[in-house]
Image 1 (cartoon, rainbow, N blue to C red):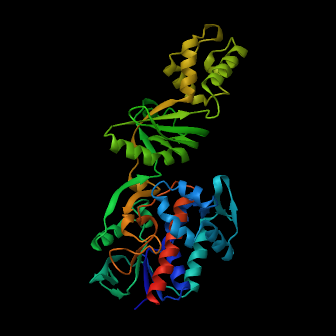
Image 2 (tube, helix red, strand yellow; image 1 turned 135 degrees about the vertical axis):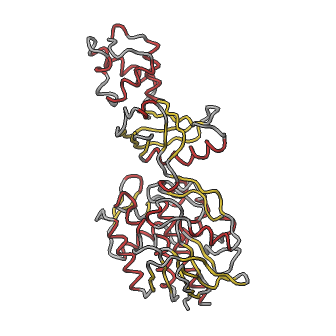
Image 3 (cartoon, helix red, strand yellow; image 1 turned 180 degrees about the vertical axis):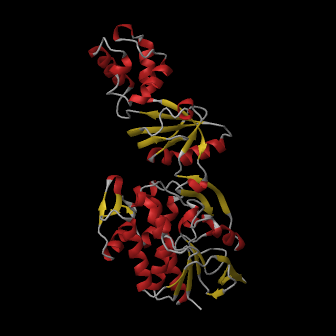
Length: 420
């Protein structure tokens, strides 16, 4: 018999185990895989972005999927607490662009090992290779779990930290939704977020731009009436199926919602190669470049200014011949080229699958969860934390902050409730 059982050895499950054991509970951590912290080990490009140093209000703005629900959890265990926690484990952190916090070692393994060691040090019992079949309930109370092996383990507090449906090779295959539904919970529709975008444009199909990386650009998602939905600045890359990189990932949830809401086949996304310049500035600068090399074909004169592989596509869309020289530039088409540099259209027809997304949108309905404790409002002794909840943020340390914060809150609350 355990005071608390935690299902799932990812970010939120490890933190829940640490918090529950720290608050005096006898804890069992169960994971279906052979090792703990697998998704954590590949996060942040294998460097593990452990949190984000932004102020709380700013942090919540970067969690567009119900970030406000996290106010209580972050009051319990904030991004500052996460930083102190890791430094207390001997892991030095450094701040990079946009507040992202990484271990100085640049190795996710450092973080995973420290968390797992802390769990072991605190006497948490660990069962790996032990998939849970179901969470057991009786008369509105959680009473334990049944493993797929048939073994039953009793506890009046179970924390479900089983992840979403994204990155299933790390073990998050959506098992937890069924256990939540059995307890009476509703699951809001699941969809991929922080996922690469797909396109059927000819320059994508022909792979003309595949592998081209662009820095400091912006992407804007438009609704069918031509109204701006969202703009994100940063970096992106053209792929063999569409576009990826931080800005594309951040726009993805808005693309998914627009396709569904407006019942359309494609969403218009525009790429601005120079977010800090106006159309007129671009017009004058490019014209001046052509003038300085007036005998050269414009496609050569523009080489230092624009990504070389985009030049033929931009010229063709503007109705300009590649071999036209300065003296023969038609002014209207040159203005069209300048407008395209500021708003290069890409028709997006969807995203890669939820399994290929970094984060799952949707999940256990937050109206049915107590934000102060992460306990179910429908089933006593049942707690949820991490990605199974209907919370999602942008990449950049926001999702992991939500996972650690909700995990800590669930663990502490479950322990306190058992030991009253």
